Image 1 (tube, helix red, strand yellow):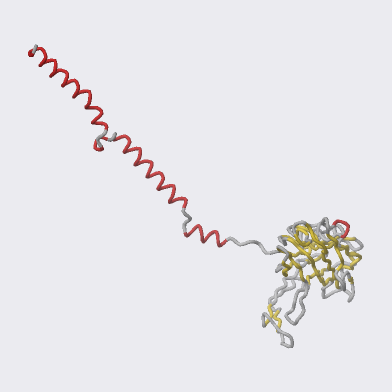
Image 2 (image 1 turned 60 degrees about the horizontal axis):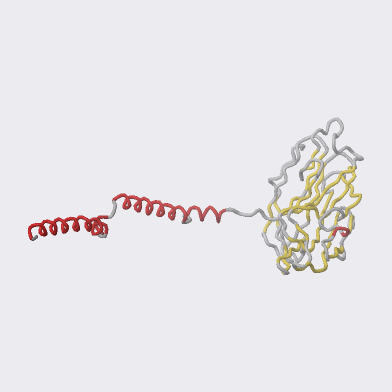
Length: 284
């Protein structure tokens, strides 16, 4: 019994040891699968690279700050030539687009203006050294941003007192309007992103050249042309860039107009010096 029982006991003990070895081996930290090490390493590297590229670089930040938004633009514009340079392309022998007796439409357009609550604009036309080439026939806000028949819901459009004047004095145009009322989002305004403040019809009276200029403040207490913006119930003067128009239906190259003045911000009673020596008239 002893001789039989001994080998059986030994054999059973050996098999028990072999059966337990895999479980003990799997619990040992030193025996982690090398493939898992490699996968973890690759994952860490990938995440590190992703984080590096996700962080804004100083150069990118500088380039983002360098981008500027175009300021609001107030421009005298011709739908005939799609430009503020209202020049007849074929003036000889008779102007093809702007002959004497032709009635032409000129618009005062505003772009990038945002919400607008009112405007007061003055124009000078027939600024020419020779005979007048344009004569104003009419001007109106109809069909534009401040069309009284097309006011935003809950709003009323009024003419600004003292405006809606043409040729008083001769060669001048002054138009103004404002909004009154409330909407669900706040005080009334119109979208000045891209629209017309008012339109004009001129009669071409002769052959020659002239300008239609936007009158701006001169620093002597005159505010010139103004546009009032509206943001969240707060009114503010819109800082726009003005572009007048040049009209020409005569042959030749338009003159080059360039001048400087000083001081750059004059005050009432101060002498202002103009220098136009860099201007040039090719026809002279």
